[in-house]
Length: 348
Image (cartoon, rainbow, N blue to C red):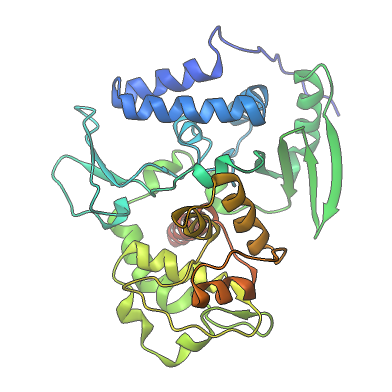
């Protein structure tokens, strides 16, 4: 099968210059924003490939689907249209004046009060933990485009497709060196929506989570391994979910599997780490260096840890019993994708 397309590589700008140009159009020359972009680009250059991101931007322009990097909440990717997650701290944004107001007292943009002339955003994802890990890009592609993408990979790169690897649980993965393409027979409908960013209404999103999702989709129990939320089924826990932070904390615990462990969960204090970033922060707060804290967080999350530092007996015992837990990016992504899927299907 042959696909005729002229691939023009580059427009005279490097990737960082492209991203800075986009950010200045949206936010003006904002030192906080530009510093974050530069830090992300340093990590990308050091641990992965700018060239592969350029290729994803090429796919974005030439395939009739959204191209989304599933696993990395880089602000740079959000600006490029390669992620739906704005990872900045909670903030207000005025599109006309380009004014950006961060609100330190509020954890997530979802929980900000309405403010005339301003939108609300920011899922407050600290990249410190992510920066300590390997960087790769996971992208879902409609299987009908598989031959086309393989062909373009060969055309785009002089060195070929890098490597083709594994069939895993029915999902064929074909990757470059840092990009894993997952070809699926069916994608979430949001992948085919134009201007998907415009479909995210913060108030509607919050109503969906605290209404339908909390009452219909949250699953507290599992046969085996057990979830950290097993004991919650006998309590009116919903009344303690008052913010998006509470919701993400609960969702994280429902994705945390343990060795037959039942928790007393105090939502006011969020007394147990509920995702990898919180485990990482726990060890950082108690004096461990970033590299060791990140390794412990990763090892604990995949039941590979041994000889944990002795800090707080109760929390240490909990961490020893974890067999798997999610990262914060995946938790935020689940809420956004579920909301958009619900909204799109309601319009069909």
